Image (cartoon, rainbow, N blue to C red; front, side, top):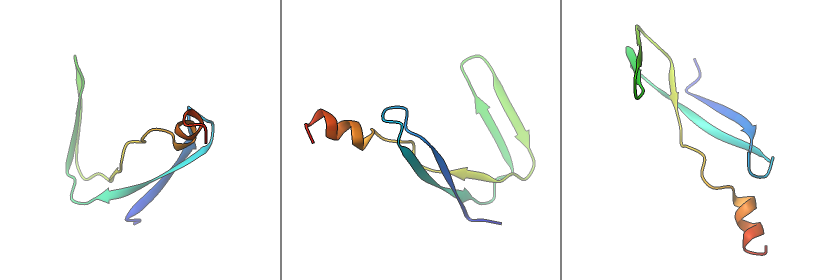
Length: 67
């Protein structure tokens, strides 16, 4: 079992390729996702990977600074 995954997608700001490392969160036995009006629950062993949320696009920041 992999201890990390790499997510690849396109940046919505510049259409460039982004990659994010997602690390395995060990020992997860249940998951609950709660929204404003509902919740979804899952009971049992699960593979959950967690990583940082994408930050501002460095390419559009350079363009705004004239670089």
